[in-house]
Image 1 (cartoon, rainbow, N blue to C red):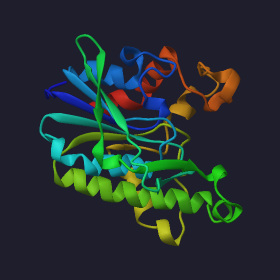
Image 2 (image 1 turned 60 degrees about the vertical axis):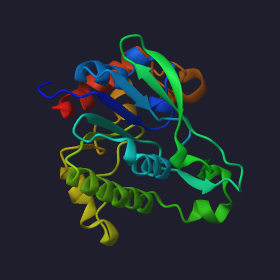
Image 3 (image 1 turned 90 degrees about the vertical axis):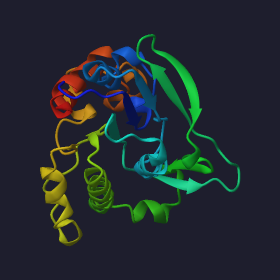
Length: 237
């Protein structure tokens, strides 16, 4: 890599959370850190969080960024989740800060996510499920991606947005998506419609916890490396 980065920020759900079925060094984001030769990884991923939570932390922690020397991996989790207020429980989200020389982790609070929790649509009432059409969910996510990329591009940020779940539909053209769909398909920092972690490994590398979750499970070293080599590596230039 021609550019030198000091830190890698990682945002996502269980597919990028440290020590879930793969060691940090062998994870796709650990391989990214090695490829970028960064000294520090700040991993803000946690299981079951929504893309709303990813965006909340990404924007809320910006006072800590050095856009010239930081690189960002922004993971798109499964879409069928929401972020809600925790009714004054002050639920904490703790990130893991790694020194890449030792890969030892230190905890660090992500204050911008305190007081929030995540729910999956299957935990909600029937009406919430009925109004959650996939084409509309994808359009809402692409609207968020559009705003995030416009902001990050205006800051000359170095980043990629990768899909940790299933590929989005590049043909989902309808009124509400008529501009943002093509924008996201063509944005060179987005890898959302092909090469998702789920799709590149489907019928190739079995998830480590396949017996519990099938092909929607969490990958070990082989699946993480395959995702890094096929979908992430080329986006680091």
